[in-house]
Image (tube, rainbow over all chains, first blue to last red; front, side, top):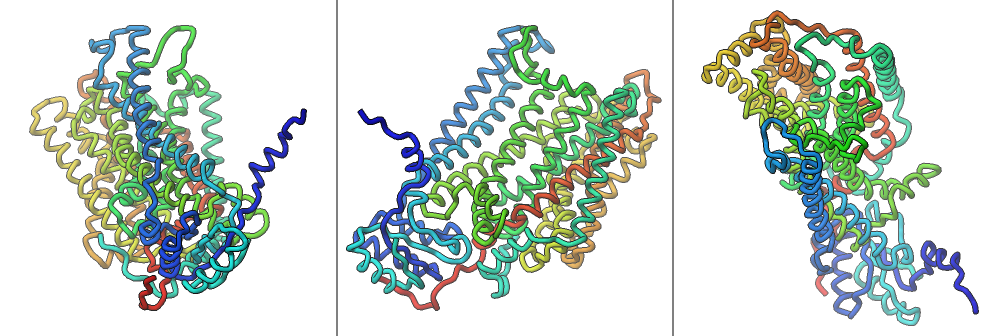
Length: 184
Length: 450
């Protein structure tokens, strides 16, 4: 029996094979937006758009669903609040000492701790949510063509496609105003 | 505060990236002179702290009933400095203030380093730093837990949360910018930024999660910043010392914190802008808006001063009245009047546009506000304790010692050292957010529709 090679699995994770497709480099925002519209009309839905800044024009034309990060924030915040309540109440009753004539479990002062824990856990789980969704769960990250100008002043669109359809996609990108087109 | 006027056409996306990436190069002699002074100050502080550790808190100028003095003053001062960073980065973000983009990174970095500085002082103040973990809720052989009804424990949670959240907020904001400098850097820096950019490429998927997450972080940081200085104020207001026991303390402290923080942002931005030649990105318009923010919060602080004295008189409590008489005309009159002149009178100059748009004048005023705000905390803490009229120690006095001043100077060195190292090694102006307020590159008004 042949055992799977663990190193090969790691290599596949850290150095995935490139996705075949076509990359278009755009100097203007409206050209990129226009291309996205044409690609969607032409039945492409699987492409990656690069931009140096988040732009509403791109968001609108891509019609992406709302990010699930908000669920991370909500669950993290609620968990933090519960942990804050548990921490203060459990610890007060575990060794009950009357302080300042107040009840052992006094809710008003504990609200401060519960609030701080809500914010702490909410913020940390938001970070986890972004990291999880934008890095670990990101599809094809690191396998599609990239250009360093995309963090500076260029917009980019990578369209994954089979080599035989690349010519057609290339023509579409050029026609829509791409300054430069490359194949992977 | 209106949106920024249209910048000159020279300021394009590419210009922004290059101008900010340039700040990571050789900053020149002026920078190293500043860094050297900061390290020297820090060395003085460390030396004094070593003496304090060796010989104990007797070296500080404590005398009954003044056992909270310069260290706690510095703690409140530095926590206060931290506050404007989150105001500019989170609250003005939620209000969609375009002008914040050029200054918020500096303010945010200042926040993190100011909280790092502030957190040192409770440790110094407890005397036996190696027992600090006694304040944490951990299971121990004595079966004891912290007293969660104490504002000091609330403060521990508030400061801990604030430090964590403002750090992650700073790091989150940095990621797209580190990616931008990664893509123009060369040599070892490219490797460093490649690792710290965590694979950022600005894809639509990344921006989708990032912008949403950033919005929630801002929404969480906004009530947090208001809560933190409220909790700090309750360290005092929950006690029955006259001069402390006031319901106005929470909003009074929050306004004062933002006031001192904005002044510190101005104090830091003026030299940074000059050293790194960022005049085209950080314009007079930004300084004018900071000045307006300073004026607004300064007016709230001035109002709080009036209310404090008014309630002391109007409330009719003899102890409270005596405490405020002592504050204004007692042996510490010079501290009280420094605070009132620096914080309430001097900033009235900011009503004049000529002052608001004069960077040198703003720099000088901001330094006076910093001094005034340090004295505000000194007056609230030390003078209220020294003047406690119901003790038999009415004639108690307090004199800070060289150990107090040395450690305070060291805290400035510690803060400026971290800040200067940050601005040299990471983008001190947000690249992606400055681009967001610029008009994007578009094809000539010709609309194309498929």
